[in-house]
Length: 434
Image 1 (cartoon, rainbow, N blue to C red):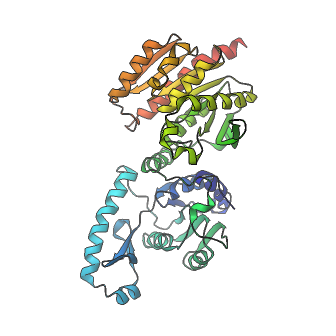
Image 2: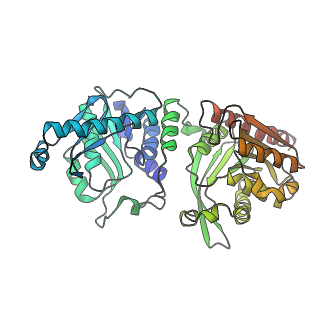
Image 3: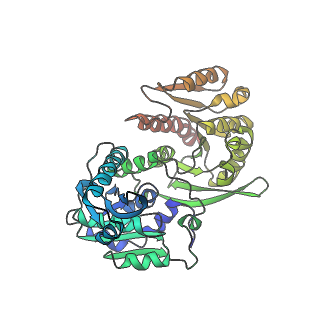
């Protein structure tokens, strides 16, 4: 069994944990890669999501050999047999623990941003990772969860090596694993996209769960899609979400170093979905193409692919809009310039690099909103220059105090509101007229 990405693995895993809903569990993702999987599981169970942070206690002269693990709340689990074999004494243990405690505190602060750790006392703890190779980290996490007071510990993973799964089965109250392939060498080989999960994605997923902003599953349907481009030689993967009665659909063009998994663009997409707009989150580059940074800044080929995706998207029989971020905004503006006036209903750029499409800006006929953070001074200057080149209806909105990634409290919500109002403001009059 192979998975498209961690979100796909999480959705499939979520279908196998529904029997836990009545236990009112707490879902714990192992950062970083386990959190996108855990987020989908928590959505299915309507459960709170947290990270379970585990630091390995390694033998001082051979750090790769772990003799125990450290968890939050002063929890420590050690293997006495390995300590004896490695001649680790209490002084060594205290020395190693001091260093790992500092790392643990830093990780907890980074991921939770000051929010308290969820209590596991008397609860069912569902520990989730994106896969298990040796089982050492998963085992430590489950032992820490039990030491933190969990009444029952369930380990849920999409894929695991057969040997590790067999050992872990005896350490937890329940093991849920979708696949234990005999020819197992690494977790990543069972994912088509196993790109690194960034800290900011972990932070955003925890925030969305804590804030109750995960979309209710009944308001729309989301389907994985593939769009063939470049004379059908390349398949671009994405997720199409269409609320019932959608008045338009927004194609997202992601920026450099980002993808359809971008937590910022996904948060904006969810806000648009709640407003009754369809969204297509997809990648303009394959993972192999994205590894070459030159491709990220090749705006014309990216715009050509976006135009091909737009043709495919017209089958939804609703107006098409573009939302572009960073270099993706340049591709969106370039593609809009290539179409006839009115074919793209509206364009929104978030922290965009319109300067990469500067010569094409006078040809853009779609109403265009440029959103820039007030502290993103270089990009703000580039957008002011771009606004002077646009001949279509346009507006430049500055989010006060925001930097390029809009990570400040309330900044991303401001982006979502501005984008929603711009799209609906140009779609609803046309829908009413129709």
